[in-house]
Length: 261
Image: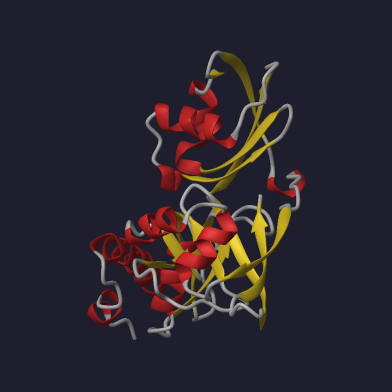
């Protein structure tokens, strides 16, 4: 059964508690109405919170879908365990944007334009940028609004058309291999080495809770990480610890990192 308070106690921070409250409401609705319900788009950290929370109940199952395989931001779909439930309409929509521009436009340019239209971040999934424009994966609640109101990206004219998920083309994420030696496997050491920033700057980011390990935010610079862990720094992408080698003669540890670029 759903024990709302037990699930909400899992969240320490107020922002996580608000997120879980919305998730629980959608899940309970699925269980009672025998209809599939869904969340807004969740980032990887929020997906991790969802996974832990759903382990505390047995009335619904769920799956994550961001519109294509490997999507970073995804919608959670909640399914009643009992049979004979209603599927409902897929809330994930695709908008193809074409922009004529001599300069390369970035993910930030497109996201900034969407935010400038007053659209909340949780209504937007991944934005897949290409040389000609981008594919915007959005919630159906805002797809029409984007279609009729996104006329420019910066100073460049934009032409939009509706797309479909089946024909969505994605690029494999590129990774950069980094082999370094570190003083220890402390979080601040790995962040410093992986993102090519100073130890002091790495410490600042961690203390400001802008660093996550396996989607859990960390504020302690001395947390020990290990091979297989995924580290993400807000605004800087993800870093995967591929392997931890032996110590050098000077007592440093050799590590192999993969940074998604």
